[in-house]
Image (tube, rainbow, N blue to C red; front, side, top):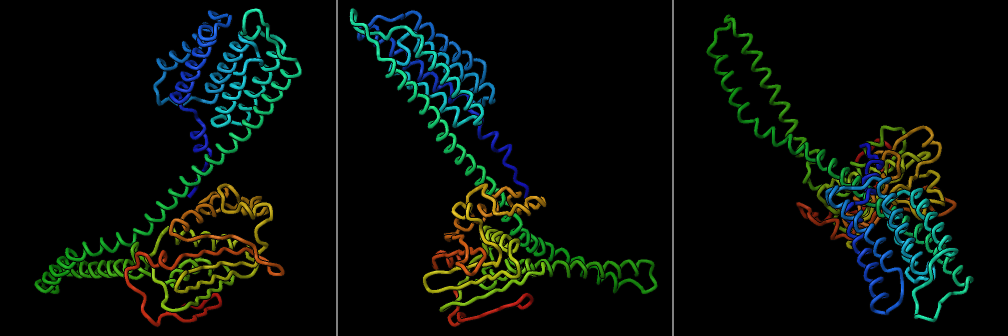
Length: 458
């Protein structure tokens, strides 16, 4: 499955117009209230008309946006950047009229940068941040006096104002980077989970095909039997030298062929893994190991446990996740991969070990996160793609998500020196693994079974 995040990322970044309009109405109401309280509540002199004119311009833009576009409209990057830049300029105009950076509301310069960091690209956020710093610099040099008590002029020392400017500079940089990082991680996680849902839906669909085939075979069995009976009677009633004798013989042969095909379909649904089939742990391990055995790599399967062997309904997500981890191990293994399944009365575990180079130190702590690829530079240069993730670092994340949904815990580590290679250990609580099994495990099925090599079967 080819899962490309480009379109998903573009849609995830687009800012909803209704959200921005609502935020702007809150800002407009706050600005109007602040100006009114300072003028009429505190009795300070300020250019009241000019302040309300600046606020009215912002309100007019909001009304135009609401009239021109539906509430569900999503802004493009250019439109969103222009609106946020306008809000920054409008705030700067208000601050110019009311004391510049001496005004405590100068901290609101950070708001447009915060919104941009969560919804726009880093380049646009950087541009908006530079606009904020440029306007803050101008306001340190030119602004009207801060509204204050009559006859008591108020002016902060220039060094203190410079400190405010520095705080805005640092706040813009920190808030912008921090908000962008958090939003980007949330976007990546959402896109990766969407990709996981697509993979799981595909695996469930493929797993149900054999059940549908068995159901179709059952439904077709009765009419096919009727056709066979009628053909047989017509064959007995027709002379051997009749012109249609050969046609009747051909018809009976084709009916028998159809019966053979339907028998295979029915047995496939019963024996080869219907969607709700209950299988043993050994069967599950063999199923994920079998596709790797034709690749010239030594796949060693070890199964051992205490007490009854676990039985579980085949889960497409678990099968896909385990297969993906084994495929990743086979990609990097030098000579062999060991798949060891074990069980006790408390837990069931599957451990997949390879003798490859292991995970690189720089990604070991982040392996399993979305868009963290374990592929080597050489493999990426050759253009190889990872199943389910398109070489984008989604493969292990999807496998981890699907496996952990079944109640397991996945741990990815490297072997302890002098050994080398990667180790993936999946552990289920016994009750979680057994949950939903169609039949109970029989006493005496447990024990210590070992299979090694590339061509033997349990």
